[in-house]
Image: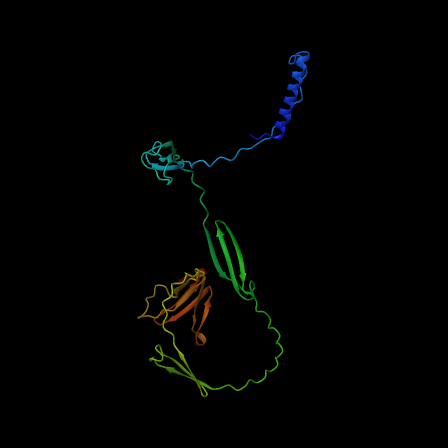
Length: 303
């Protein structure tokens, strides 16, 4: 048996006390005649035992599953959803017959609210576009008028003026003459064993090069649809003499309404396209002549 140093000290101490008692017993009787208590001995050494072995792996735990079922006729006809939680021994999230159900709750849909009151009727707005005068826009333009009930507001949009011509730049220095090149010619080559898809023969002086056409590649995939274009300007044909029958028995003159302005062919001085401004005009169509008045927004009336 192994005895540490502290234990040896305790044994020696007990032995000495024992000898003292034996000697004292001869004189006056040992044991009850010794008074007082000796000092407490030092604490024994702390020894940590070896670590135990790892325990066996426990059984796989069970997950929690949630099952929701629509209940159309539940909740006084408003319908709802029945939510069921269950223990999922397979950990798949799928309920199987026999799985332990832990809770069942019914979540009802709210009842339909009452119909709100009608909103206030809006005010109809109209927009007109007329040509600006030279006093309003020196380079031409338009007047945009928006009418909302009894209130109207107009904005003038003028074309920009032509800027001044910039000064001419200084002439650059002449470059040096290049070396004379070699005259080349290109001759088409028909398809053959040498050029299965045909090609071209490039001749430059005494040097010839055969350029072969490549084979037709596979059809590429359809590209992405491009962005929508900006809205175009509406162009509407307008007959100068309303009510007059048309071609082939008669040749009516027709103008085009573009952006609220009327454009037609003015037959004097050889004929040219011009804007037909509001006012009274005459049409000399073959078997279809008349006098007419042009109003705002390309309106035509007979005189």
